[in-house]
Length: 521
Image 1 (cartoon, rainbow, N blue to C red):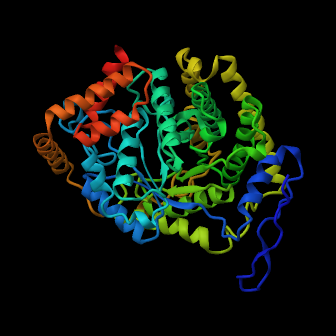
Image 2: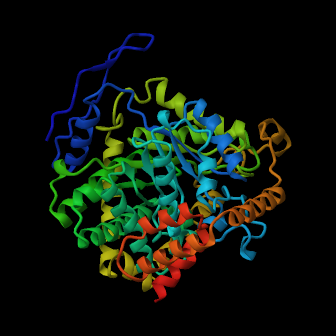
Image 3: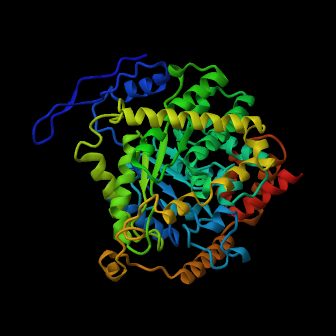
């Protein structure tokens, strides 16, 4: 195992106290993955902070472009586009099921021109990464991102695609195709990224949404890892090298309630996943690509006292950074009320920056390592996650456990844990079940401003779509969609014809329809 770096990291504090890059020795065989990770990271001086990511999408493509441009000027480095619900479900703004939902939970994005507009205010030469929440329409999302990056000459910008469709069936509800067809789409995205040499993560495997759905963080990680194995298995079956596949994955994990458990969850995830890969595919831990972790600092946000969410989010940011996440975004203080306002989104970014750059919070990598408390948390989490993985395997693995209802049953068993703890007083929430001051709530309201006229957003989206369809060559669109359908009916990768269809002017809904028709042939 590589030796940890013990050189002085910094004396940049009032007492000029020397602070080392790491204090961990990782002597235990169980810490091999952490030792390899630490040696790679601490080869360079800190701060050992994540890349500052913003997860944003609101109203129209132009509104979102202006928000992303503002946040980049404030220092954001990674940009994950939040598409609205119709876009995630494969509906264009003029579909009847899109009514009153366009632009509300993200940006309305149906065409390649829409996504180009979303990115129009970004300086891609200064961006680390770009991605989109696509999941069940992953081939369309990746095709949009890859096309814009090519058109802008941004070959070095990394992908941060949230293309994990298996969780949708039990955690979010935006599934469109069967689980097996969904796995194919996700794996086509990874295969395309490998074939085309696209840097970054073409697939982000998520536990966060399982946690929020009721599974809690431990079962959530196990379900995510089981899904990850299903994706890797399929790509290996296709003939791709395990290390190439792993290099295109990112894991979006989550723990929303305890700073120390949060840090432990992220660091133990590195060990558990590395050992799963070693045991299943025979790749020694030191030869595996670094596991890339994403976090989202959020949790017990209050709609009654929005400003009090700022210290809550700050603690969540600290927990994730102490756990060694590679990418991190943070919720806005008013997100319990609305799409975050500009000042709320800016403050969330600044919160990450302060924790990442000040008070020595990230001067040392894995700063809690060696703590007796952390060691016990690590053992507990590792045992429970592995036990859950064994149960999933006993139920046939990720796909079969989804089909036979095991995943749904396990999530249902965990629902309501947080509420029960709050009602029983086991967990304290300032301003709610302790120190409640309803007569002073106005002190904590904040300055959340900038309401969106969603009816106007929807009218604009429909009109924009109408003009788009009038300007395109229908024969070219039909020919391109026929190629998407043929690819779906066979075994060819869906990405090349999807890229061609978008460039011909096809909309997301038309591509989803062609994909479904091909699957049904």
